[in-house]
Amino acid sequence: MARWFSRSSNRGASRMNRSSNRLALPATNRAAAEGFEDVQNIVLGSCLMCHAREPFWEGIRQAPKDVLLETPNDIARQARQIYLQAGVSRAMPPANLTYISDKDRVKIVKWFRAATGNSIAGLL
Ligand code: HEC
Image (cartoon, rainbow, N blue to C red; front, top):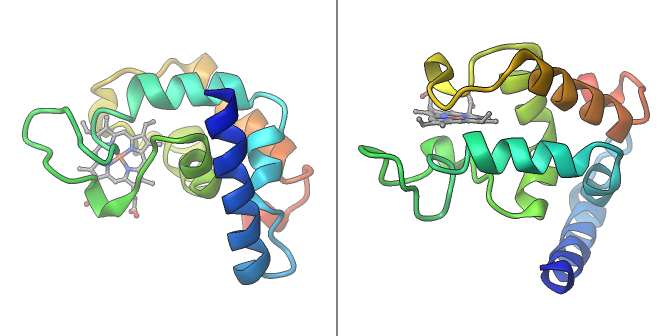
């Protein structure tokens, strides 16, 4: 797990360097930010069943809107969307089907804000 994680975050770093705009911090900062492990557990426990490469929620055959939330790199890349859909809003999971507690939503918010250096850059 650890070895695979560092490989995938290296790949993420080079992709970000190519495509990042100046305001965005590299995805690797998000994976390294305080609270990432908690957020990863929340996402794997409450989002993965639908947002996997091979979803295992009945009726979902492909990750909705191609949003993949499976690997640390996926989570880092989707940080802003996770923050918006499950942190500051309750859009995800739909109808809170897989249940995220308010405490866990606060963890997502804190992680995202730490990952973006508490600047407004990540909020735009
Ligand atoms: C039961 C299945 C299911 C679960 C669990 C689930 N989602 Fe989704 N997700 C969906 C569906 C269906 C859509 C497409 C909604 C639409 O078309 O507007 C979606 C869309 C999204 C999108 C794209 C939103 C957009 O408008 O572009 C994001 C981001 C997302 N989900 C994140 C999450 C996160 C984060 C979690 C866990 C906290 C989660 N989802 C849990 C089914 C799920």
